[in-house]
Image (tube, rainbow, N blue to C red; front, top):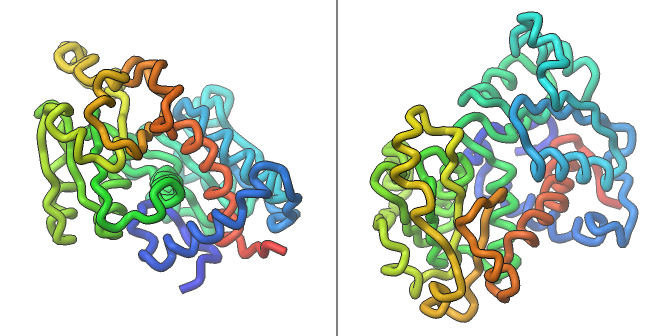
Amino acid sequence: MTFKGLDIVSIRDLTIDQIEQVLDLSEKMMPYATGEKTCKALDGKILANLFFEPSTRTRLSFESAMSRAGGKCIEITMPQTSSTVKGETLADTIRMVEAYSDAIVLRHPHEGASRLAAHFSRKPVINAGDGAGQHPTQTLLDLFTIKQQLGGISGKNVVLVGDLKYGRTVHSLAEALAMFGAELTFVAPPLLQMPNETAKLLENEGVKARLCSNLEDVIADADVLYVTRIQKERFPDLSEYEKVAGCYRIDNILLREAKKGLVIMHPLPRVDEIAPEVDMTENAKYFQQAFNGVPVRMALLTMILGGELR
C-alpha cells in the first residue's frame, strides 16, 4: 500500500509495517532535522496548517518539518481572523484550502473533525488533534522516542499516568503500543481512567492493561513513564477538576524507586506534574521527544506527498 495521498486521521490508518517505515525514514531524517544536511524532498510543495485550537509544539514542528524538507506552509492559527467567524462551515473551509495547498494539517476542538475534513478533501489530511479523540503524529513521535531510547517497543512496560480520559495522546499511543506488543499500565484516578472504548479495543488486540491509581505501586516495574497533564479545559464541571488537580507529581524522591534506565516522557505542556529537578536527570526525555516531532513529521510528509530523500 502506497503512502502517497494517504489521510492520517487515526493511528489505525497505518499498519505496523507502515509505522515501521515512517520510523525508519525518521531516523534517516535526523541530520536534516537538525540542519546538519540540506533536504529538498518537498521542494515546491505547500502545506496548509489549520489550527482551530492553541498549539505550540505540533504547529511549530510541522512548520519546521516542512521548511527543513524544502517545502512551505500557509496557515490559519487565529480562527477569529478567518471566514469561520462569518459562519463558513468546516467542509467549505477545507474545500477552499485544498485549492491552495498539497496537504492539510488540522487541529480542531471537536472529535471527528479530521475525519469530516478527509471526507471533503481531495488532498491528504493529517489529524493534529481533534478534541479528546486522536493525535496520530504525536503517537508516531512517541513510538520513535521509545525505540530511540530503549532500542525497541515490544515487551516494554509503559506506564501511562495522569489524564487518561481526556488525553487524546494516550488514546492513540495505547492503541499503537498494543499493536507493537508492549505491556501497558494505566495510572489514574477512577474519574480519569482510560475510556471503555479504548480498553475494549486493547482487549480485542489481546492486551489486558493493569489499572491502578497509586503510582508508587508500579514505578519500580516501569520502562517508560508517560506523564500527561490533567487538562482543566476539558472538564465540563470544574468541581470535578478540583477533586483530581495535582494528584500526581514526579520528583526525585519518587524516582529513587525507579529503574536506572527509566525513560520519562510527556507530550507537553506540563504544569506541575513533573518537578523541574527531574529535568536534570538522565531519565528526562520529554524535550528530546518534542524535538523528535521534526524528523518524524518530515518523514511522514515526504511519504504522503511522494517526495524523495536524495
